[in-house]
Image (cartoon, rainbow, N blue to C red; front, side, top):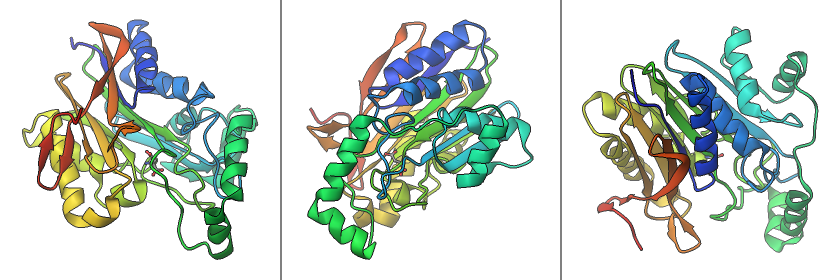
Length: 317
Ligand code: ASP
């Protein structure tokens, strides 16, 4: 028997982990817990970076990405650029369980979801639409729309929920769900729904899930590397730190200032996390993550550590 634990990225991950933990207490598997935690964030219109209420792309369309991976079966499912369908992590699970494929994109993902009973519903809230109008009116946006040179990023316009869980059977699962970078180019897909990048689980060793600047993070297979680091004997925090330093060693200039962060859960229930110092040390944006377990069933928010190429900083406050 293992001690059930759910971990997630960001402060809003506290409520989500608590929802996942409750699912475990109700007899659900780690996979169920990851799905419930993802749904909790997806349904919350106040979370502007995930599911309903997520910020749209450059054309004002909310395109959602999500993935889920089951340690017990080593199966995975994912959707990307999904429009007008809620709870994309649940669609990802159905892709895993009911299709011969791992990932479905855009219109194909939407048709698949509709065929499996998901309702068509706009995921764009009034608040998100207003923020998009403001962005569109800005000069920067005008330049982007005219030339499409690159996505204008600001540090607070993206925050994927990455989730890992272990159930009482000792099985692990991981998931990610996100609206991706706000104002992204239409069709842009980040790291979050990519197995090995946004999430990874190996039932023998552990699970990891990521958030941050996906266009950079996916070049380092961050979640896979973190799990393999645990396989080679590192504790979860060391595993995250090493993966991020590897990323920084290859993409040090471009990963800044938007940041990358990862959470990890080892097979024995030990947890850890780390974030790049740059991008997450701002007073307006510190690196927080959350756990829910028997000692904190309602979820608690934790901070740091931070990493740069020179060192590891437990907290910066
Ligand atoms: N990783 C996500 C993406 O690049 C965004 C985030 O987690 O902040 O789409």
